[in-house]
Amino acid sequence: MAFGPEGSLSAGAGDGATYQYADWGQTGNACGDPPGRVGDDLAPPTAEGGALRAQDLRTSGDPVGLDGSIIRVNPDTGAALPDNPLAGNADTNARRIVAHGFRNPFRFTVRPGTNELWVGDVGWSTWEEIDRIPSPMGAPVDNFGWPCNEGSARTPEYDAADLTLCENLYNAPGAATAPYYAYNHALPVVSDDGCPTGGSSITGPVFYQGGSYPAQYQGAIFFADFIRDCLWAMLPGGNGLPNPANLEVIRTDLSSPVDLKVGPGGDIFYVDYDGGTIQRITFG
Image (spheres, rainbow, N blue to C red):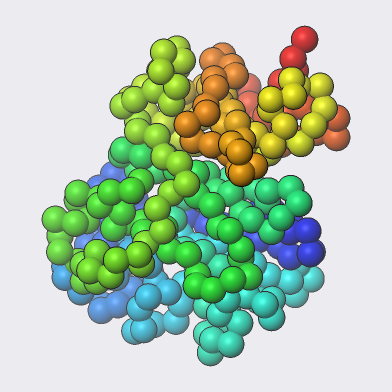
C-alpha cells in the first residue's frame, strides 16, 4: 500500500494463481471464472481463470475482480476516487483500478514530488520488473501484460496455449505496457556484482531524497531481491528519472529483505524476514 500526495490510498494484489504451472483455471476453477463455474476444469482458448484474472478488466462475462491490479481509493471509504481513469464505469471494482496485468506487485512506492507509482512486480520463472505508472489519474489504465507477457516478451507457456485473452493482447500493438526495467533470473543485475543468480524476488523500490548518502544517489531508486540478498541503486539520468543504464550494487550481504523504507533522516531501512529484525543501511 502507498499514500499519494493528494491523500489517496493505493493498494496492490497478486494474481492469486499457483506458481507451479501455467494456471488458467484447469484444476477446479476455484474462483468460478468464465466460461465455467466453481469445480469446472477450464481449457484454452476461452479460459479466463488462474493467472488470467490479472486481465479480468478486459473481460465482460463476470464482475471485475481485483487480482493482479493496483487500485486507488478514498482511504476513509474504500470507494474509487472521482479522478480515477474509469471513474464513470458501471462496475465498482473497475472504477477502483488504475493499473493491472501484474503477477505480484509485492511492493511499490510513490516517486516524491509526483503522483507516479513505481512498482516492483515479482516475476514467475524468468523476469523481475520495475514498472512505472506515470499518472494513476490519467487514461488509459496501464496493462503490464501478465500472464501473457513476462518482462518485455511473451510468456512461452501462456503463448503456446493460444488463449483468446492473450492472443487478443498480442494482436493489439501497444496494448501492453513494457516494464521500465527488468532483470533476468539467470543473469546478474550489474555485471560481476557478486550476487547469486538462478532465482529472484524483487522488493522495494524506494527513492532516496537526501540525507547522509553521497550526492550521486539523490533521486535514485533503490531496490532489493529477497532471493539474492542484494541491494542496488538505479541513479537518475539527465531527465531526473532513474536510468536503467546507470545501476550500482550497494550491498551483497542483506538478510532476506522483504520491504524497503526511507527513514526520517534519509537512510534506507529494510525488513529481514527470516531474522525478524529491521536493518538500517548507512554510509560511514
